Length: 92
Image 1 (tube, one colour):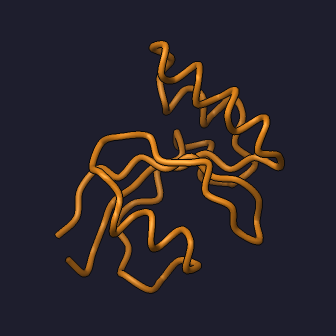
Image 2: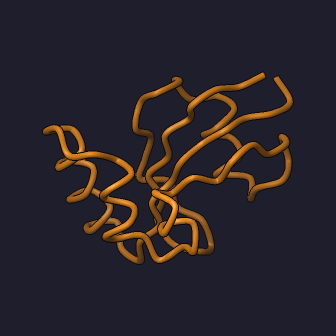
């Protein structure tokens, strides 16, 4: 598996990340939550990162994407950018 497609939500604190994850677990739409809360420019696209190669992202993010369960909300994942929730759509 060398490629993946994922959505993510990036926020500054672990607390905020956990609050958003809780809302998603209760039925909130991942894309809508990304548009509302993510500090990453991808938030405008519902957190869509498109397809990317293994090694393109920082290690903690990359590890989650390529080792985590598909279509499940992963996180909080801490990187130098903040805290992420990640939803891996597919790997190929």
